[in-house]
Length: 111
Image 1 (tube, rainbow, N blue to C red):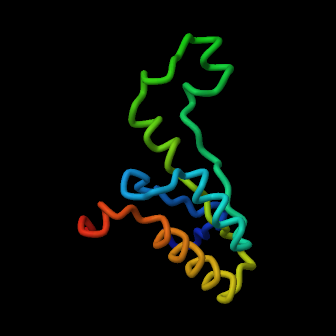
Image 2: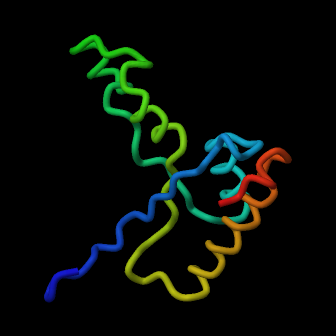
């Protein structure tokens, strides 16, 4: 980071490898919320929004990389006043939920 520049600490986005999990991104989101972690979805492929579909005729399948990310990104809590306990709680909950969501076939395919 450049000198004199500070982060706004706005979003911490992770990309879930749902093909290695037994749950979808939305199911992971629900499980994290049950762990009292304030997660959200902040990014969706632009071409999937109604305005762009209607205005430009975009259709699902036209931008597969954007759709891949759209179905897998999740925003974790991040804010300037976040203390170490909140960070630790978030990390522990993500680890717990992802570990419980690993599909049997992916356990030997870790990288």
